[in-house]
Structure formats: C-alpha cells, structure tokens
Length: 439
Length: 145
Image 1 (tube, each protein chain N blue to C red):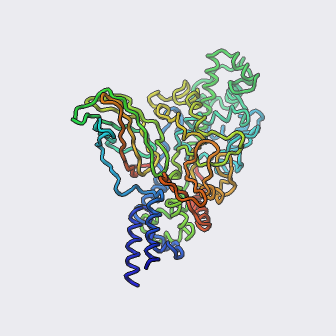
Image 2: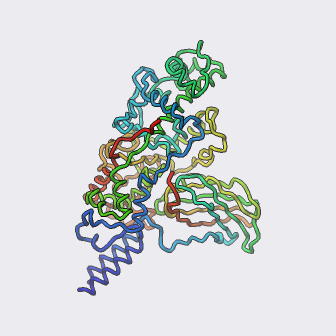
Image 3: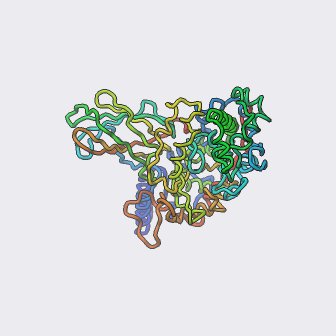
C-alpha cells in the first residue's frame, strides 16, 4: 500500500512541477478541499497574491496634459462641479447623478439615465487615473477629456459649451480665474451653443467667430481639468483581501481568520484554473486593456463594437493629448502614437474593469448584462461565441475533445467552485469607504 | 495501483493542457537568435531598468548577417503577445530610428501583466524577408501602473 502511495505521490508531484503556480496535490483529486487554515500557498502563488495587494499600487501616473491635476484649489473646484446639476440641459443632472459617491461612484443601473437613457453602464471612478484610456471603449485618453464627453452628450447631461462658460462666470469666477487666468468675454455669446448640441445649438456655435469659439472651448476644457483633479484625488482604501495577503506574506497564521475557507478556495481559483487573473491582475484587478469575452450584446440588432469603433474617435478628439487644450508637449503623448488601432481583436472588445468593491456594484459588464456575480462567473464557464468579433475564451463544444492547440483551455468550474469564486469576490469590498486626499 | 496512477496521469495531462499561469519550464529565453530562414542573426536588448507594468518603454534590436556584419536600413515590424492568454501586445511598438552598427530603437513597448510574452519581429532587409520570435518572461519588476 505504501509503495502504491509513493508512486502516485511521485506522479502527482511531477504533474505539479509542470505548472509551478498551481499546487495540485493528490489531495485535490477526490478528497474534500481543506479549510482556510490549511490553505498553503506556493512561492509562485504568493508572488501572484502580492501583485494584487493595494500596497503595490503607486500613485496614479502624472497626466502631463492637465497642469492643475494636483492643485488643491482645482480639487476643490472639481468637487463642487462634480455635484453641480446646473451643468445639464434640465438643471437636474450632475456627474454625481450617475457616479454617486455613496454608491462607489456608480448608479447600480444596467445603462445610465441622464436627461435621456444611455447605452452603457456607468463606470466607477476611484482608480480611473491609472487607466490609459477612459470609458469602456477607451475613446478618451485623459480623465479631463473623459469628463467633457458626458457633459455635451445629448442623452447624458445635454449641456453645451457656452452654457457651461456662462455658468462658470456666474458662479465660480474667482476660483476659476485663480487657477486658469482670466475668463474670456462672454457677453454677446448665445446662452446655448456647442458643436455636439441640437441643430439650433450647432448653428449658434458655427456663427461664433473661431477665436471666440476656441476661448469658450478652453473654458470647457478647464472645467474638465478641475473635475479630473477631484477624481484623481479619490483613493481606494484597503479591503479584507489586502489584510489577508499581508498576513500570508509575512507568514502570520492569523491569516486563517481573515478569509473563510470558501473565500480562500475562491482566491486560489481566481489566480489558478478559473484564469481570472489573466486579465484581472494587479492591485486594481485590471490590466487596463481591451478584451472580447463574448458578452451578449444589449441590443442584438446593433451589437456594440467596443474598442474597434473608439480608436478613430480618440485620435480625432480635439481634447486629446495632442490637441490645442492639452498642457502636454507632443512628445509626452506616446500612448496615442503607439495605440493599437487596426486589429480585428478590437472588435467587440471592452476594457477590463477593476474589481475592487465589485460585490457591491451589480449589474455587471458594459451594459449591465449580468445581474449577479454568479451569472458573470457562469458566463466565463459557458464561454459563448461573440456576437461581434471573436471571444478570447475557448468554447467547449459539448461532447467534443479539447481543441488540438488551445491557446487557452476552457474554464471548467463545478457549482461549488462557482460559489467559491463569488464568495472570494466579496473580500474585495473596502473596509472603509474610499477617501479623498486631504487638500 | 492502476487507479492511483491513472488519476495522477490524468492530472498531469490536465495541467499540461490547461493554460496555467506560469510559463513553460523549458522556455528558450535566448536574446540572440537566427531568423527563421537563417538570413539574419538578431539580438534583442531589453532596457537596462525593467519597466513597470503598463509603462511605455523602449527596447533595442541589433541585426547582423550570419557572418556577423551589421545589417543597416532594414525595415522591422514588431508584433507578439501572450500565447497562454490568446491576446496580442497592448500597444503597437515601432522602430522609430536606426542606431549605429545595425541597431534599431523600438519604442512603444508595453507589458500589461507579468508572465510569458512573445516578441515577434518581421524583418525586411538586404537578404530579403524573414521572421524571428523571442520569448521574455516579465516578472514583477517594480510597481504596477
């Protein structure tokens, strides 16, 4: 009997040696999984755990296109503007309407509702400064240019550039001018004019002389820069997972009390055979890149092309890093220079969202297609073919053998494992709500 | 006995075919390789200081004939990705300028995560077109972006 066991053990460890990050012992073959106190992490697994820790998150990289991003006065002005519902056509929509500070800066809806109904899910804001590209499709290349999109979008805020400038002059002149210098003369300008407005607003905008238009657009851009300063000041606070990882890395047995057994098993799945960490990596649990995972479209008749449609938009955006309102020198705009654009893998690809606080942010995906985290995990197991483009996931056809040269294996999870993954995701909730840096 | 061995073997097979998160043990990490049709000898030079995850950075590549003479004025296209994850490079790196002695500067390199990446070069030079693939394993060099 002992010889039998040692042969099997030898084969088992050979198997384990083939994949350093997954410590598959023979115990996993059939016996019940261990309790959290007995979950042992290999050296490779600990390296992966360390990479997820909030401790590893540096300050967001500086945005050379926004000269005021770290100025306390800009953060203050931005905080006020963020909640100012006068920055909308109907006086009822502010940034906070869809990015509610009390709900992790999102609204809990499948698609957002401003003055009209949008087509995508509001994204949470904390940590957004770490992304190269903003929005699900990355059509903006800075936090400040992102803020301007919804302001003049017809279904979101529905406001326009001259209305915004008039508002700043009437209510924030002193704070604005302390940061950005003198406001341009606005008398004689129409109350409502802008290039993205309705027909009357567009005509009114075209009737303004180009020099004056640029002055107004500059005020508009500066509003975005103040809002961005506030947004980048918001910080993640540690989650229970961070405490657990700290304890594991210092060999503290108190770690066994920090995660339940099912949560620890879910974590092992997350960094192992469930393959989540292949995109949900780093301290924000996002690689900030665009992936097609075959999420079913909200509107099957008009599937969302995601990133594929966005690269032309960001290149053409007058508020991008290379544009006239950017504070950056052209040589600081390398992301635009080396952006991937003509690539079929961008079809139907969306930015990997971060997962901190995810358990409190239903529904999920770019148009809120999944109501629960369980549905999300089951989607990755089902790995349906994509409606547009090609899913990166490997679809397992029922009854068929595994594909000959799988670039990646199908994600195979039992019902218990699905539940464990969902449990694990709950450990990413902040133990205190996110904090703004003190000015 | 058979049952145990069968279980262990199937486990081994499972691990061998799953896209596990650590690179294959016998990965060829050589930074000097002949191109596929042996037209060139290609040397890839990573930056002295490894870049942080998601940070744009530059590499250098040096082209030589099989006899060792520098190859100048070649055109090089850069591609690649993570074979275990089925995705390509997060950016479109380009040769932005030629350096002395058959060296070329590749700017716009970026790695979006740790692990095994392929860097694939398509070379068009005096000896004609050829290709070469390098492997690199990105570790946690510093702080993530």
